Length: 188
Ligand code: SF4
Ligand code: SF4
Image (cartoon, rainbow, N blue to C red; front, side):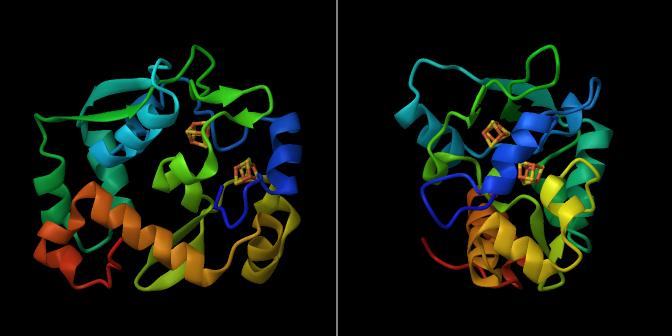
């Protein structure tokens, strides 16, 4: 759910009415939920101090492989950031796999305080190109045949996606690593 305005795009509101949206994982998929940096956790706690909503998760093989798929050709950096016997923090999920921050009308976190991954979705950057996750549950994906249509219905653009991706890399710690430093990471 990328953002350029204060409201969720209409397509996401319609998607939420149909479910499951990008805010719910299948049972058993919790371990591959994306990690949350300290910065992202603090930003959420600032606006929702008593909500909880985070869990510590071991860096399982499935999780590490998922992060490797997000950052192809950056295995060394991924293994340094998420070592095999380490842990990371992720969003807490309810019994049905829904994020604890998912309310009846969508995410309860103000957009500018949401995790970068949430703000990027369904877009990502690979090899410097903006890509769309091929998710069958994403209504925007189902309704559009081109990336420009996706930008329009999600109410974003390539520049915003690149900016959010750079901020995510910075928050997740990529800047410390040579492999990540080759990419353009904007300052905050
Ligand atoms: S933090 Fe908000 S946008 Fe992100 S998964 Fe949870 S409910 Fe969805
Ligand atoms: S799955 Fe796609 S359409 Fe649905 S809420 Fe997420 S970004 Fe919006």
